[in-house]
Amino acid sequence: MMQWLTSDFSIFTGFIVVLALFLVFLGVKIVPQGYQYTVERFGRFTRCLSPGLHIIVPFIDRIGREMNMMESVLDVPSQEVITADNAMVTVDGVVFFQVIDAARAAYEVNRLEFAILNLSMTNVRTVVGSMDLDQLLSQRDTINDRLLNVVDAATDAWGVKVTRVEIKDITPPRDLVDAMGRQMKAEREKRAQILEAQGSREAAILRAEGEKQSKILEAEGRREAAFRDAEAREREAQAEAEATLVVSKAIAEGDINAINYFVAQKYVDSLMHIGSSPNSKLVFMPLEASGVVSSIGGVAELLRNLGTTDAGKAPVARASTAKSSAAKSSAPKAGPWDAKD
Image (tube, rainbow, N blue to C red; front, side, top):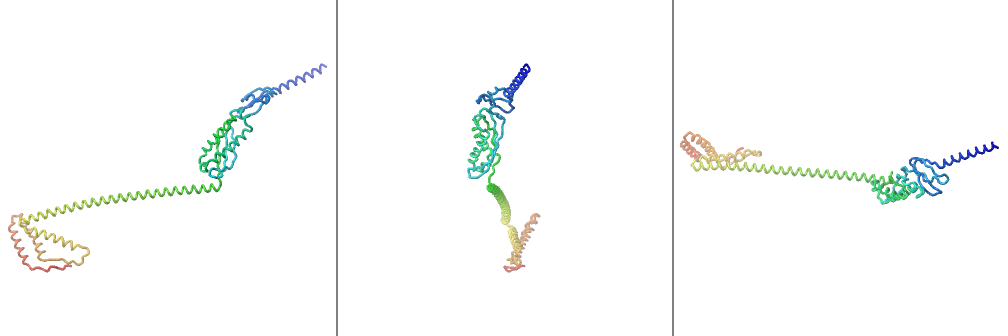
């Protein structure tokens, strides 16, 4: 009998120990880092368990949801979207989100990730569909900001913070890509032609300015040359006027050889101009022998007069000059024209 009682007591004790261990196992909860557990008492939410060791009441409290509090990434699958200018494009992206309030994320929405995914897809269609293709390809930052604002505002009631929405790829149709390539090539050719035309215009302007400056300088040179020529002619005229004045003074004093010298000089100059013509093979000259001889003789007599005047023999020179003039005037005269090769 005693052995039976002892055996029953051992079994009861073992049962109590096993029951205690089972209750401890049910009541002790360890929450890992980066997670929060919700606790439900009789099916109603009571509190959240932060990372660490916690004890709950077995059979009364239970763990409701195990919420991941770390930032998570959700892929948005590719979808075809029609833009505002009726271009069909394929768009995909990613969404980064983080659970801020575990209780609201657990009990305010069912299937949290599925809800965020569908919300992102619908807003991608809305934002992309309101933009032209050129804006869509060149303004991805604008698209990302608009998507982030819309999705984050919608998920705020779920205790979720959407940190980033990124468009990964935008793929237009192949024929549209080819058309865009041709358009880009045409734009580049247009810019090249414009630059070439501008270069030609600037070169023409520079050439015209150079020619203008050259003509201005040439005109200034001609004006300066004409001014110099005028000065030279004026000086020559002044010299000639002075020579004429001297000759006139000599004539007024009774020296006839002065006018002979003046006429002879002009006559010889004229003959020089006639004979120096490059096209003259045969020259006809009006040559009056007595006039030429008398003019040359007057020149010689004038020179002799100048020499004898300096030596104090001026009266003798004038007498000889008078005799020679009388002799020459009595010489026979030639015809009005003499020919000379």
